[in-house]
Length: 579
Image 1 (cartoon, one colour):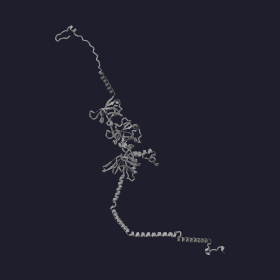
Image 2 (cartoon, one colour):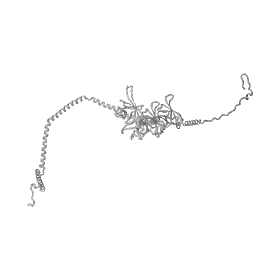
Image 3 (cartoon, one colour):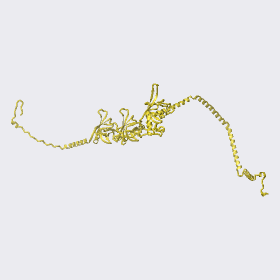
Image 4 (cartoon, one colour):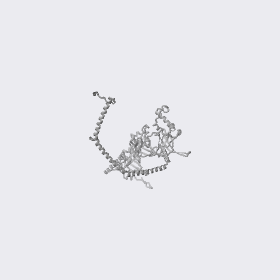
């Protein structure tokens, strides 16, 4: 009941009856216009397409590169095995403006490849001596290459590679090589095994200490099983030229290795393989095959040589020979200062490897002393090894009794390189060797060049002592006398030409006439003596007839004297028929 301000006023019952009553009216049903059906259907279709697209799309990833050369949003593709698996949607700088962030949309079917160790890189045309790659990008433009990983955890943020990997999914093994320098190697340089290309260089970097270079190589399967812990790697770049008794030997792995460098590996014959090497095993890279295949020396002894001549041409690593066979190498070349004598002399330290001589050793047993040299070959080698390596007894005997001496010799007249040679010099002064010292000193003799210089010097001295000036004056006088004699002879010959030639011509003409007369006389004698009716022929026949009659008479006389010897005194007997 309403109350007025100040006084309370009560409403009358009649007034309530006069108020109108409220009625409830049901709402009217509205009708949807036909014109709204089309927008509703379009919205439903759009929503369905959006849902289907969202369900069919792959993840969106971000890749950070150092530079984005040739990468464009909406154009650059992401490829794996030449199959498009995504497209770049945005390219922008990172927050610190140091790198480039590339956003790419990956296809749904490739979403499973986006794992933690997946790799991305920019593929662009590259031309080098080792080959040409990325030629397809010349027309289509650069694209982003993809390498799958092996991790199980998915990821949407990646750091791109600055250099495209050489090997992506090929089966094989990777190994590391440690070298003093890179040489002519580069990424893609071939690796050879028995001159077969079996792999290549995939990366290289400077070691953390800065003293060596680490080279990573990839060996294709199944050749990676031929890499053992005992395997030796060497640089096969260039040409290996060696000169021997058989002539010049030129060795190179291939023309590619000659141009761009390469590596090779093999197992040395003295190292039996123990099994394939583990992945990422580290090996030493040698400079050449000779150094790689060099057998290790178990025993090494150092000796000191003091020469009295120049060491020019002698370098560390120069060979040391014993009777022409390799026996060691030079390990130090320098000078030694003797404060007591105030003298400086050349000092050379050599390393002697007895094991190298053992391959040539063949001790001969003596029947009178079988205990000195054992008859068994292995025992003989053990004895020689003990004498040479342990006590130095054999070397001491060779130096003190046989005259073994060190000598500098020329290894090449072209390069002037020297080496140390040990040979027997029986006429050398006697010397002693103290083998108990850590580095015993061995005696030396002057080198062949020094001896040649000395001989030439002595010859020159003898020539200087000769009275060359007096000899020259005598020769000059003799030459002057000879010149006068020749002039006189020349004058005599000229006079003979003038005085004797006319008389000689007359005499020759007379001789010619005489020979003509003789020839005519001989012809006349042939006619008078040798003709068939010549008088001489008639007289000769008559004389022969007379000679024949005289011969018959002589024969009759001879017969009579033989039958009647007394007829010379008594006369010829008359025949009985005549009495």
